[in-house]
Figure 1 (cartoon, rainbow, N blue to C red):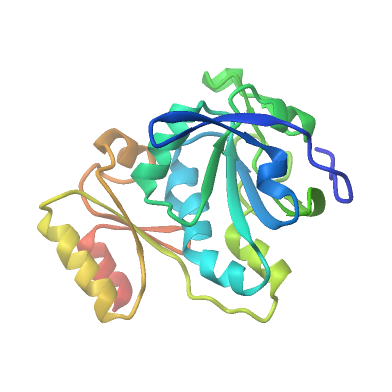
Figure 2 (cartoon, rainbow, N blue to C red; figure 1 turned 90 degrees about the vertical axis):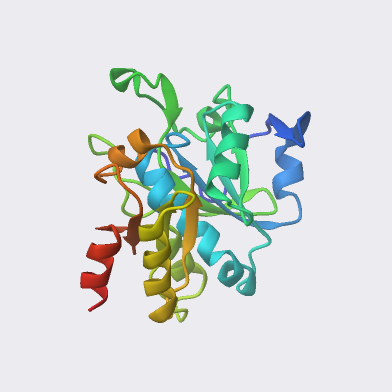
Length: 238
């Protein structure tokens, strides 16, 4: 994978959905005159992307803003409907989710890879970057290993580049469902221990299982580490 620091990002028009309507968004709209943190991932609703990658950027968005970042963009080779649904599912109000449906941006960045072996077709390699007025200032590219490595494109690595002195708490993500008493207990435990968290409600059981859970709610991650349900969380906090 080629590091493109110092180069301009590709000139692309993305087809997005906003309030039920189609909306064209250009790379100028996203990057011109702004300092933007970008992270790109293989697919919406996939385990690492949903449990850790996107939630942590959403958590740290206020800290990024304090250190000169105007906006945070998440890119994936998915269509606009999928990205719109994922944004609602994740309640990622601090992130601009962009579907690179045709893979044009990813290809222009040299990051389009073939994942046909797992039925994904062409997808983006996982990476992150800082784009300053349309020019790539810094890139963090995952190592070329089998599978889906997730070592350097995370939000904390990005923050360490922007502000090495910043020491945010570990990110907490909790997957819940409506009316679940164990979910309520887990949230009470987090609040009692002064841990802020990102709640993702209504995730399907089979998706939860793909993240390593048992298929029951809640499922808690702290700092990217799977903790488990309310009982496991209580043991962990002790």
